[in-house]
Length: 112
Image 1 (cartoon, rainbow, N blue to C red):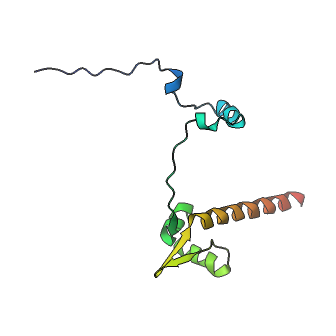
Image 2: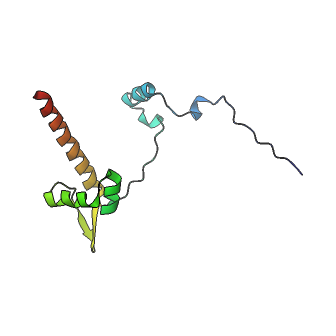
Image 3: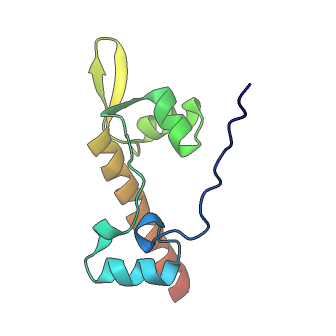
């Protein structure tokens, strides 16, 4: 019977094998336009969200999402057959609109 030995990984890694974890180094490399050199996880966002996916992604209830639509504050939607969907672009535009609204509200609160 042969016992297989497991090699322990070397504690000395080359700089190329390390991820950039230092926030200051990450900020400097992003400012210099070298954002590609910083390790970034790939994102697989769907092309369109169902109501349940959208609600789960943003921590909302389905009824709150439908209330947003009723008040005209939700993202643009379209139908595929009977199924209501939200495109990735519409969701992105909605997030930008909500961020701008929150920014305007916080600036207004600071003036008071």
